[in-house]
Length: 312
Image (tube, rainbow, N blue to C red):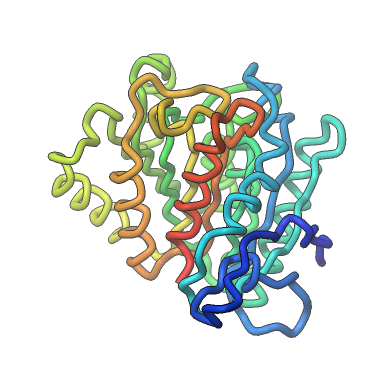
């Protein structure tokens, strides 16, 4: 099961006079094909329907190509293979169909031994990413203990007749209940003023671990590290998702719902790297980039840097 990637997005500077030590991402990445050595594989969900259903500002379907363009010219410092596995596009309003296809591709990548790195798209990518990971792990471990680490200003636990960018973690909780799996959800950077009391009560009922944005400062770092380490100690596998609206609007303006407070990039990147260093990461994605609302590609560049921090 494959989607043909658009490799024309991977262009950038070439420092030929400096040899192999001057490679950039666009010179290293290859289109995914059967039989290649295992590595990290980028897979996009080009979708606006979830944001639209959640009454947000649309434009996130252009997130995956914008992230690729931001990654393309970064200096390459890795050694492992890196692949582009293409995008799943949402056809019309068929969000559920796109999520199902994306989840199947994620499971396929995992079965082949790759590390899937998702490119959003709205945060509806989270339910598709988790479903793909859980479907894969349940074939090998019953029941798997999957930790969900979300950097986000919002819980995204909404109740709604239709799935949207505001419902993915409630949907994951329901998946876990059906599959007799623990629901281990940690959300870092929650904005109290952008989540209703009903959502905080829902988080409490589901035993969600969280830290408010105002409690995620440089002087809080030892406590944040301990909080994260304690969460990771209770799971065997990690799914990490980074909603770019967790960052301050000055750093990440190109999102549907910019943060008035947010969590500084330096803190987010440090904790992302710490979670990666646990050795439990099986799947990660970047969500909510809206290039139409970005300023000087700031948000795309930050998303690219965070994604690059997950590559060996």
